[in-house]
Length: 345
Image (cartoon, rainbow, N blue to C red; front, side):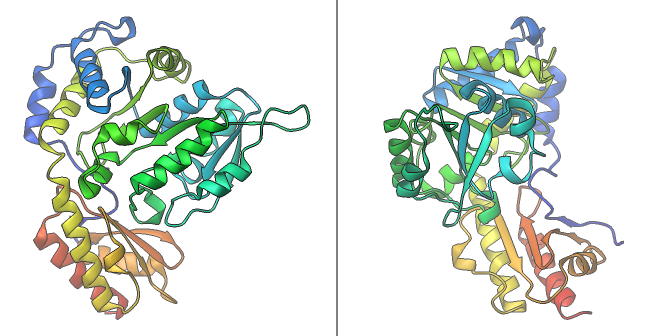
């Protein structure tokens, strides 16, 4: 395999910036198990204010954020409505069933966006005959749909029908900063439609580790206990929170560059293999290329031999994710490698 020059496997592959490394080395720390890490506490307070929520909790990963939220917003046997290709359905190895003993009612969305009428029709009220629906989970951006952004009015409509029927709403906002930058919708407006929300520092924002869960004071108090139950209690974690703080300072506005690079990548792929991607539909930093009859693993291997890594997401589907370590030159190299790979060179 040639030396990797362009890594488009995910936006999780980024390395911390020099500023992040300095902040980690110099971070003031304490024992977060006792609530005494000042860097974590300051970050949690900052994030809660950004999202217009009462409290926040730093967790090791987006998956833990999702699962902690499910755990405290449901009881065993409850139903949870979720889009069928959501991260917590496809990529969390059955954690909802194993950890919280809930039933996922999966609905098909349009580019990840659920229909409020279908959500309303699916919600079950408490009954001695059936499990009842306690929670509606949404994902913005929707990874499996190519980083699509939920329109705010659609989010409000689904949230409204859920709350009218007594359901809580949870928003998996792993890439919510991408959604906000792409749409211009403030973070607090997205958060207003949810009882709890999480996001990742370690994706487009480029920090090495960590996610944040935000919600009410009572919800976050319960989440802190659940985090410990799931093995996520941490000690001098200010070394990680410091990098996350730098990510908020320096990495948010530049997400627009990743979105522009993803659009250019999609346009180049479409030129190399007609119809493989609709570049106009690329809203944020994720590009899926439908290879038709071509084998995704084989095409990915050919690209890797040319120094470009991409992810075979299905038998005939490639995923590419742009991030701060992929510049315009990297995009051009990826387009060239893709063209050669699909031509079998």
